[in-house]
Length: 373
Image (cartoon, rainbow, N blue to C red; front, side, top):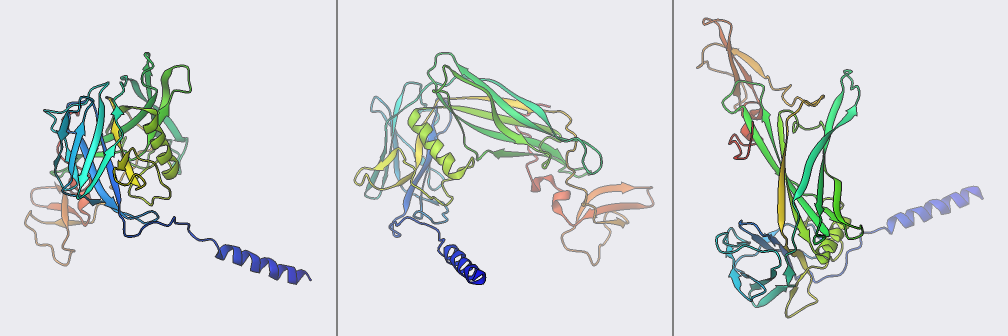
């Protein structure tokens, strides 16, 4: 009897497991979705609107830039600004003739073929400055396998709007760090710049004041060389209205803290852009209108337990002059250090990995204009 029940249980579990399938909403497979990414700010900068088509829901998608669109932005006075396309699918404003202003109300209009898409009218709300941007060391472990401590750091942000006009915030940041090869080569020092793909938002309307204290932007571990020499982070702070905040919150809930319009889209997230002739057509993305403030932080401090990424660089040692012939070696061989015990006995250290001999394989040797030693 027990064995009979056991067989029934096993068969039941197998049937249940076999019935678990991915749910994908029914959509028109022949219809691509319009994807719109872009924002305008109150800065004297080029504003970009990226327009593309993607596959329907439940598909792994890749952006397919949509060329030849007529894109305009109109303000509260019905003044229209035409955007120019370059490169394909990217439509830009002229920084010398267009700049958003606080209190302005803007509408995006996209014409592609015989279809016209229009955004809701978006008002640009003011944004306060970033009060402070600071970091704190974090002890990862008191003693690693070698008995040495390891450290990382957390970066925090404070901001406050005494006038209570900005209740919803969004942040983006760009990291830049310097690194150096431990060898005497022409390109030994480089910089890496990387933009965050995370969604950082905050709603202060539920509090008695528009204040953000110790907002955690990023945690930097000792698994990279970001903190080894010198590190910089540039934070951009944007004002949001409640509708746009709700959009970003839904996107965050769907994708976790890392959002992407080109990942699998498991649900419809309402956009502020619609097809004038077919309001039920789904559009991905959002037309953002935000005032912006920014602040930069440099970190140059010793952190214990920083990694050494070049321990396995040395490939071989070749004795002889600078024009010595190397036989039987891989075609991809780079000199990483010239040394000599004497003028009569010079030798060269070589590697089979170009990243050990040229820092531009990871970054750029061009010093950033904002970099401070």
